[in-house]
Structures are given as C-alpha cells and as structure tokens.
Image (cartoon, rainbow, N blue to C red; front, side):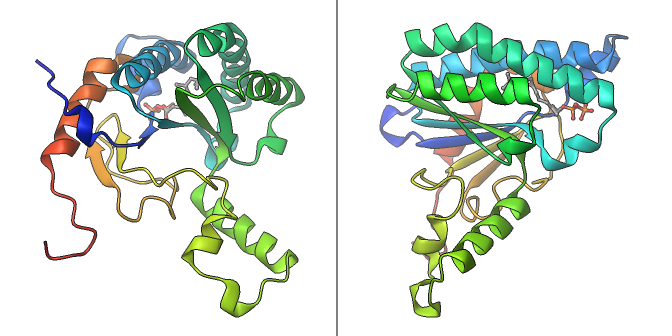
Length: 235
Ligand code: FPP
C-alpha cells in the first residue's frame, strides 16, 4: 500500500536517473538498450508524478560530463531524445504538461535542439505539471553562468543576495526541490542542482533506472513525508 499524504507533497522532485548501462550489462546487452528502457521509466515516472500532483519534476538526462562518453553512445542518446520528444509531445499535451529544459542547450546538435525547442514552445501554456529536462547541464556551469550574467548586468554588490542570484540561475522562478532521488545505489550529487539542493531531502535507491516505476516514486515520497524538515532550526 502506498498511502501518500496529499497535503504534504514535495512541490518539486529532482531525479538523477542512473544505472542504465549496468542494467543493460546484467542482461548481456549494449548500453544503449539500457537507455532505451530508461525512456520507459521516464514515461511511467512522469505519468505517476502527474497522477500524484507533483508540480515540478526535473530529470537529469545528460550532464556536461556525459559529452566525454564514446561518440556512438552520445549520438544514440541524442537520437533517443529526439525520438522521445517527438513521440511524447502529444502525451505532454494530453496531460497538460509543460516541458522545459535547463543546461547549455546550445551545445546540443541541431536536430535535438530544434525538436526540443519546438516541444517547449508547443507546451508552453500547459499548467498541470512542469517537466524540466536537464540537458548538457551541470551545477557548476550554471553557477558560473549566473555569475557572468550578473557581471554583464553591472549589478552592484548590495544588489546581490540569494534572491537576486536565484533569478540568474536556469531554474529562475522554479521552487527548490524538496526531494532529490538518485537511482542505482550511487551516493553522489554529481554536479546536479548544486545551488538548489541546499535543503533538499536526499533519497537513494538501489533500483537501476530502467526498473524505476511510479511505485518507486511513491515509495520515495512516503520516505520524504516520514522525515522531519527543520531547515537548520531546532524545532
Ligand atoms: C545514466 O545511466 C543515464 C543517462 C546518462 C542517460 C539518461 C537518459 C535516459 C533515461 C533516456 C532519455 C531521457 C529522456 C528524458 C527521454 P548510465 O549510462 O550512467 O548507467 P551506468 O551508471 O550503469 O553506466
């Protein structure tokens, strides 16, 4: 039984989808087979999140560091992304989901970039849930990028505080995630949302990403709800 308290839901859940390669290996298949099955996990998790009433879901789909993977894996991941975006835009529309992306999107090859921007444009008025894909993203890149923009805009020292800095991040106007999930039994942050996770609850599961389903998401939310969040206070 997954009894979730609807009055204490995290507004924003971020997920590091890890373990596609190892999942494929256990099946004696190529890594890309793991990524293909990772897309199924994405679909079920997104549907589950909408069903539960989550407002923001951020998925770490491709990190800045992932560019150094073998060229054929990078190409296959990009192709998978284009396909998934193309195939799922209708599902996003039917479910009233707004798609967004964070990261250095200009680094993506032209085709995935174009498909992504089209889907973002098409879904921009949807309002049930925000699905944010982190693509060519890293937390340090984002913080450096924000700093550069602040310098370019000539902000004075007194104007710079947490609230203004936040406005220069790619998650501008998005609440910080209350819950960060990482799959595959790795206990690392790996450069994901470094600024935003200052007070996030961290949830780690051994489940490899292609096996992750909405029931696992509910399990993570239940665990989150059982924790007491104090934000550095004593009570
Ligand atoms: C991590 O597993 C996964 C990735 C680097 C890619 C995630 C991409 C998808 C799930 C598919 C496309 C996404 C969308 C949003 C349609 P890994 O390769 O690091 O696995 P390993 O740690 O076992 O090697």
